[in-house]
Length: 101
Image (cartoon, rainbow, N blue to C red; front, side, top):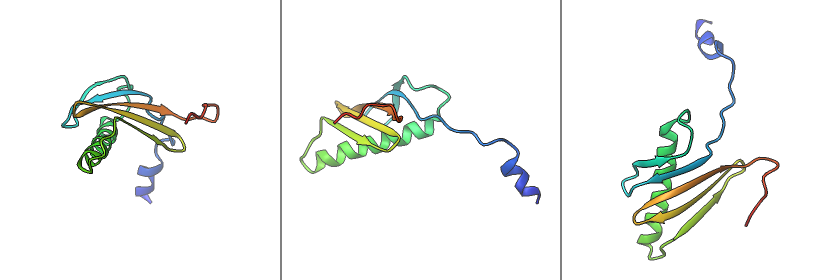
């Protein structure tokens, strides 16, 4: 029963979704960010890697994208290519957020 104390010793916390902008170079390194520093950098790195991979795959398929938009139930991600790198906009969605197409 001791192992249960590790799981339940701290109260459950609700994590806030990231909000802001990330600028990454062509290698995926974060150059600048307006996302709070309290948000895990590993998650921002993962988002930037996936966006760069998507832009690279589109280029390889000879269908270069200038902008992509990904809409999740609670997060909207918009990204624009910048000479191999990208600028990524993160918008948390709430029940009161307007839906734009």
